[in-house]
Amino acid sequence: MELLAIEWEPIYDLMQLIRNRASSIYYGWWILAAGSAITMVGSVHSSVVSVFFLPLTRELGIGRAALSLLFSLARLEGGIEGPLVGWIIDRRGPRLPIFIGALLGGTGLIALTAVHNELTFVLVYVGWVALGFQMGFLQCMHAVANLWFMKYRTRAMSICSSSVRLGPAIFTPLVAAIAITQGWRAASILSGVVVLIVALPLSLLIRRSPESMGLLPDGLVASSAEREEPAATHEQVITQITSPDGFGFGETLKTPSFWLIAFSTTVRTTMNSAFQVHFIPIFVWKGLTEQGGANMVGLVALTATPLILLVGWLGDRWSKKNILIMGQIAVAMALIILNFANGKSAIYLFTILFAFGANVSPANYSILGEYYGRRSFARLRGILNSLGIVGMVATVLAGWIFDTTESYSIFIVGTGMSAGLAALLLFLFLRKPERNGI
Image (cartoon, helix red, strand yellow):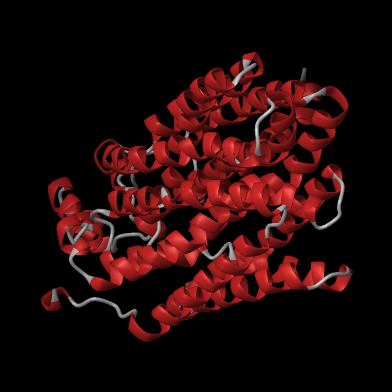
């Protein structure tokens, strides 16, 4: 028995050391790690939309514009749902929407295998799959990052956003390989199972705010004098440091800067929505196979992952406005290259520029927190989601243009021009609002 005790003692010591080290890490980082894993598996939804597009056009016997419309109904639903989810997060915290969203998204992908016509596709995809994925993933985690971090807000958001790109880098080629060899239904079932197994348990780790656990944002610690005060006084100190003293919801909507941010965000999210559906078809139009197109989508997502982290690092040190301007310029240049250039060097240059420009969301939403505070962030984020309804029109338009011209050129060039306009407006007019200047 003594020998056993001697043998096990180092293991007990190691376990105790790990527990002590883990407890010394600010809980916001644990939430961020769990949330990033949730958003990463949730990004399989993006892979499913891209990979299933061409097989569904063949199976349902409909054109690209018609199927784009069916997929885009989910964007309309998200526009209505966004402010409501934001309201729930602002008042009840993010855990409930994350759990419900993961449950609906995972089971919905499994139920999608029963679809055999347009009507059942709309009912299952829009009313079940898309409802879950738009409710419980990136919108919630950006709100979590804004609540748990102030100094490191952009960095925290970049970690969440990079996980959204790392997911497609892994899932898109895998989902495509399964869909091509085993059928899209097998790929849908496996995707749904992964979401349920990973996202549901991790959602239980999410907490409402640092204040709800007696903590401060960024892991800040009150001074020793403050800690010796009575509990009521200590609560007052926490409130003074972290009180949501930013702009009210109505105040924010009266500022021109919010609508400039909203326009820039809409251009970016509209493009991302359309490319989410048409990315593989665009690469097939450029001469690749469906698997080759899926691999290119994965390459773009993989390239975006470190670039998003770079955006987060820069955003905590440099002008977020300049990052947004650079992002729109990069998108405009990437789309010009995609439309007019050919060859491997052109594809690689497009990949780098597009991966950066289309993924400046950490600076995009962090500037919202920087300009307007924590008070109404989730609702404002929901408004930006609502404006993404424009993506519904753009996605259908891209399909209609291809159906009528057998080319994506008009759509690609028009989207590039919109990005250039957004860059110009941000450069000329975006300013941090003053409270007295509303």
